[in-house]
Image (cartoon, rainbow, N blue to C red; front, top):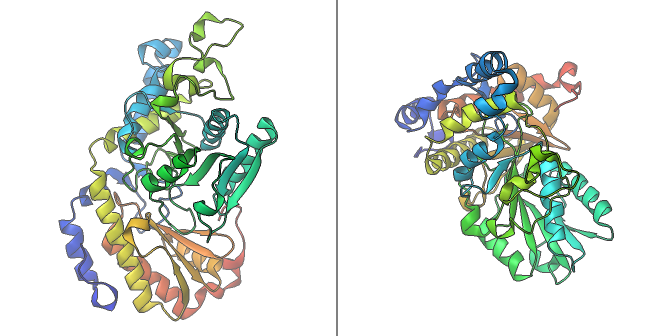
Length: 418
């Protein structure tokens, strides 16, 4: 760990720590632009070195030469389940418990509806008021389709004790809050939900690849997550979907596409669900995206998530310490749990003119993002971020705040994506 924080930490301290840190060699496994400090891996992960050639191989060899034969010869048809088995160790699941799905939104719709159907006598679904908006929008769609479902929202200061009762069917929770970085105790929360007779669906989008997860030990029911953040599979890469084995033969997903059929190439009129996790497949998988995903998942098989967690906490501690000691007159709030057990791998700051400050920071080569209404958000991807990067990023931010260069009108112009 970095032993000094705040003003006692020098850039030389950071350089020395980076040289000794066991994950530092993975920085060379990513293609990042020269002069860029990338603090947005919690939104879109960096490009792994091996990914372009992996995708090109599928384009030129499997598609270009194999053509349609590659559904058999290159194993295309089985990829969603094979790659699901590669995701499984990263989230504490076993073989045959995870499948690669469509977008995260579709997978969330699949699991939420299936969970609700498993509790037919209960008519309440619970979600967090500050969940990522798509989670709430999709929950609204589930309510419309199921008919008569009541939605209860858990406020930022509320507790599950206040909201759980015998009417609750399903609880949808984000393992890591996308704004604050707060990390739920998955095992304890799942146990509490089960004691109330309800099921839980975990959204792992901001935790998979950043913190250790053990769905099996927690006895979770369902989970979904994206692969384009900390798992580095590329923009728009498909989601993964977990279903506990005890639900495999009774869960009924709402979207019953032909790839989820027990015998897809029998082309029968009636639908018969495939056994196990395969019933959650829907349609033809995006093979170019799966090529990128497979290339990064092969790398993840080498990585010790315990080391990832140690480095994540060290980097976020360093960032918080430096901001507190050097930027206190400009930063009104550091939004992140100080307790390691409750922290994901990101830190948010409240700063006057936060959107404009972030645009000025990005122009200087330090890339984070902004989340309305007032949060500058920084993600810490341990595989390619160093302590020296963190030290330099805080120094650049301090220069922008001290000089007030962020007040230039051009920085206030809003982009479509913030």
